[in-house]
Every structure is written in structure tokens, then in C-alpha cells.
Length: 262
Image (cartoon, rainbow, N blue to C red):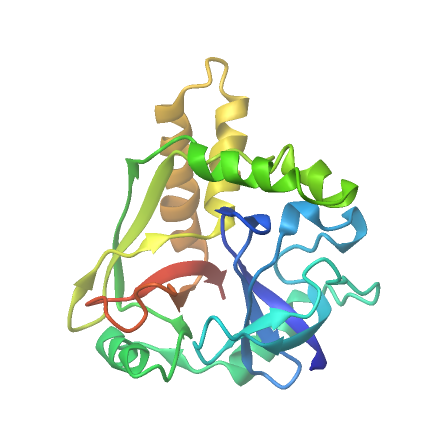
């Protein structure tokens, strides 16, 4: 068990856990430059003062994750005790230098796939040779009703603190679309899904700004944000991560869990 300080580089769109409610896959670099994935992080349940953002430094006590043997995965000793220290350094150039100093930039996806299948690596910074397209498709727009029922039912056997959040276990709406970057790495074309929460935040922002709450227009504006503008204005890198269920057996277990404009 150790207290670590982590520069947050990854926050994925929330998913639903029967035990913890909505959780956010959170990953970043320790002060020593090592990759760390924190699971679970029940972000909506954190105190307001502890609700961190990407590129914030956070502190938490961690321990080995017995249910997830991916090499970078650790479990917060108390998922609700993550803190955001007051001494934040907002100098992006310093954070960029820190990232580039400690992160190897991968360019070959096949090498990463082999490493994932051998459980050597499950987080990586990746630079594609060429980004070809940014696309989307519709998906389920409601959280799993049976899981919501189970979460609320479990609350009946819990104390007041537990039962309160379980009455509203999904305060963040389900994201009704999937977005993908299609890219070429010099050897193969790939089209991984993007799980970065920033995509979902941009969608809801544009949808709420639309006079008629037009989903097509909101998706079109997300494309403009993350393809037309982001690629033109920055040197875009992907933070790739493997999913727990498919890390060792999917033909390509990597998805995009973070976007890093360097």
C-alpha cells in the first residue's frame, strides 16, 4: 500500500458498475513517470473539492488489483478518498515536457498487440502515421435497466450513505453514440473506438446549444472539433488502453482512452 501522486491523462466516459455506480477509467503518470490505471473511480460520488480534471495532479493510496492483472492497474484503497492537492501547477509546457520525458511514443500497433497478448503492456502513448477519418455510429441510449434495478435493490440492505446514492446511481446520461478514429500506422489500418470523456462532453454541450436539440448537428460539430480543428492545430497523439475483458484474446485489444494534443 502506497500513496502516489498522479498526473491524470485519461478520463473515460462513465460506465455503470453494480458495486460502485458510475465509474470513470482514470490513468496517468506517477511522479516517477510510470503509467498507472486506477480502478474503480466512482467519480460522480467524489466530493466536489476532489473532482479532478484531466492534467490535474491527484493523490491516493493504492494497492494491487486482485481482480485485474494488467500490469499498470491498481485499486485505490478507498475509492472515495482520492484528493486533488491545492498545489496544482497549471504550466502546460512543464507538463508536456514531463510527459515527453517519461513516455515512449509507439508507432507500430502490431508490436503493441503482441505486448498486450503477453500481458506486458496495457497503456501506451501512440502516434499514428496518418489519421484518415473520424466517424460515429449510434448505440444504446439508455443504461442497462436490469443493472440499475440491481443497484437500487442492493441499497435496501445498506446504510443511509450507501442507499442514498443508489437511488440515483446514474446521474450522468448514457452517451448514445460511439466515435472512432480510423488511422494508418505504416503497416495496417485500424479503427478503434474512442472512450475519452471529452468526446461525450462536447456532444452534450453542442446538443444543449442547439435550438432544436438536433443530434445530427451535435455529432457534426463534434467531428469539426476533434477532426477538422484538433488535427489541424496540434500534433495529436492517442493514449491507448486495453479493455479488461479482451486484453489477451481480441485480435486488436486496444481502444483510444485519451487524446493528447502535443
